[in-house]
Length: 487
Ligand SMILES: *Cc1c(COP(=O)(O)O)cnc(C)c1O
Image (cartoon, rainbow, N blue to C red; front, side, top):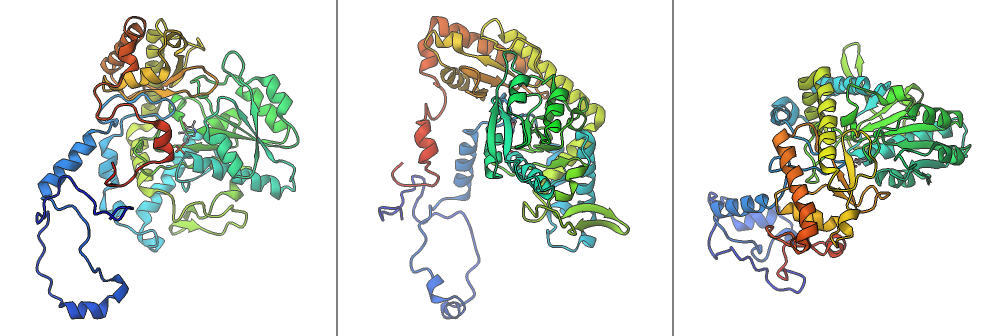
């Protein structure tokens, strides 16, 4: 029944049709009534669609084809690193010894899983230049919060109670100020200069005795490497604050540079971006956090350690901020990341970075004559364009994004970072072929020409999708997440 007490209408349902065959029930009704409490016994049949198995299969397969994924097309969504997720990761994650174990098993019976987690921790320590890593946090934002809670515990344990502020650049990912607020800090914004870098003079002005930490993404969300990172680290450390590295997008520095060597005290990684965990459909993520030695006592418990007789869970951690996730994090994503790191090796990871940066620069240079390039410098894994030239012709970045759907592309990230007008943030990733990159470039050039000659075709886009333009406000505020007759 729906909310108006009307029976649901299922367009594909035919009375009496079934998609299952079960043996006759061999318990009589009276016996059932004795076993099941009265309140739980159904008085009427459930209101379910009646369909054959094949028709259900076709229905769901048709729905799945309406979705866009990395396996179906190019997905240059900036800051999200929509690279190919190798299928060997999936095979390994399905091994019986990984997929069919229980988190409450005696550690002695799951040594292989603990060894994998331990080795993954060690790999991430090496990749980031940190001293210890926890795999518990479930996503990037969760890792940020975990890291900030550790910084908070560190200052409080030193009797330093006045450090209530976290400094965040104006180009930061939205989760940074949000995590700082939820961890109980006040956020202070530091400005970017005309080169898209943190303004050092502004940083000196806002840093002080009340600074708990500076949160930074490097390369930043404009795809630019913060060249004065060593100076920034000195400024913040001299004031007694800690440096937090948002390593969600490590694709531009893997095997080339390490946050630990740049002076950072805490870093989180997104295994579901850089390390090929499938994402984009709201599936599980993993946001491990690495710390330098003086923050190690505060890491979430338990930590996976190597003892005399094998791998153990270390719960004896008196200064720990506690558990941040039931059990040990999203283990299946850890298996995928481990498989990826081991199959690539250090040289493979270096090639990832080189190709990610090469692909982004290639695309940026090819598109620069047609769209405004607000920061004309070598980029790292991604770059931003501004649609202000097209806006003067009456075509906005949102319209360009919709037009791209007609060609089977997922649009880039739009209107972020906030400090670039009509922003398009494009991250091609290293796994795309030159043919794919050229196809997207040609389409973007065609759209730039349409903006001049036939803007209506862009303004009315998308033309080829099942659903046209959504009311985005209603979709966010009043989503319809289950079947109702009213649709
Ligand atoms: C994706 C991203 C995050 C947030 O990660 P989630 O796993 O979505 O919580 C944080 N910072 C940056 C720079 C990101 O790109």
